[in-house]
Length: 430
Ligand code: SR1
Ligand code: MG
Image (cartoon, rainbow, N blue to C red; front, side, top):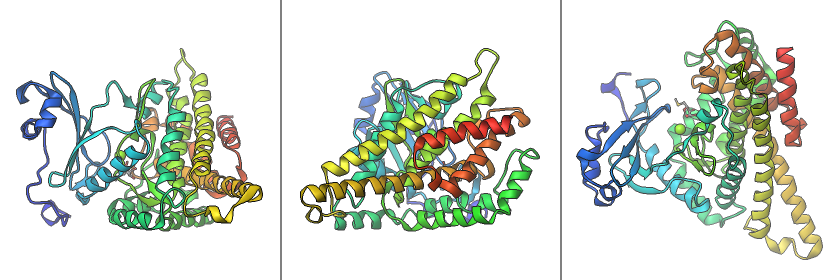
């Protein structure tokens, strides 16, 4: 489709900004100018968007900084031949504000949303870096497991039927139902394309041709991923971030912030927890590709798996505690009176969290496979230049992804998953 045929609705007055046009735009808004200090001539603007979809500007002034994210009417990764609705910026803003309310201090502050320019002006996070980039360098983040456990426990619990009233929740479900284009991307790119011949797919070839072909012919795997796709499409459990990989997390040693919830909608909680776990596991497998003579990355790999375990155990504990403190409409207190009732409700909580671990592992598996066989890859692997070395890291990632997707119930404890990661890697290298 050419640019002229692009059917995306563009609000009157919308124009993509650049380093020259952003300062005059910001100067029109006194509250924003005041944060920067001085005038437009003194503001340094850098466009740093390295994601797949948007423009991202970092602006520095004499008194402070801002981050500006603007939606483009097409997929940046591909170009104008792939149109994409601008209203994703609206859903992102709604989710940023709501998740920020439920998980204070774990998202960037939002200063302004412009529904014509489809841009959000946010707190400039400095000296934070994208977690994925830090992990590739082998940097440990001591807070990240607990912070991500807290973020997901709070955002998922308080937007679910466990933590809010039924009528309010249905109104929020209705609002986020409009984010169909971004849900469609996930449905196609994660749950469908990697399992078929498709122009969008790519992998390290010819090294992984055998596994790509085997997955396309794998009936149990295709049944499992299709069941999961159906869960993704039909389970309005909570307001999920929708793209919670390690590229959507900004970190320092002391601070963790979750950014970029433009894929947000009411979906299965395990999609968020699984995205985080799956991307940690992918990083684990990539470490051998970043090892040097001076650092074999063995200690860092152990830290990555400790982080997987600490995240899940922390999440389960915090989610269960919120539920115990604040029983909502879905499990009415009237049904669980007295000591026997309390024990029965505790059992219900344990069962639900155990089921959520199974969902988490299945979604983690799907996320791992799509980043190796689908259109959008991770720099954890992409930055391993030598194809044989890269494929040797990707192969165990694919194998564990398949195992989690098809056999998640065999992993009732998170420690069994980290053990499987070590075993699969050892077998692939042995
Ligand atoms: C065409 S968009 C590809 C991917 O980028 C985003 O980060 C999402 O993960 C999406 O699937
Ligand atoms: Mg993103």
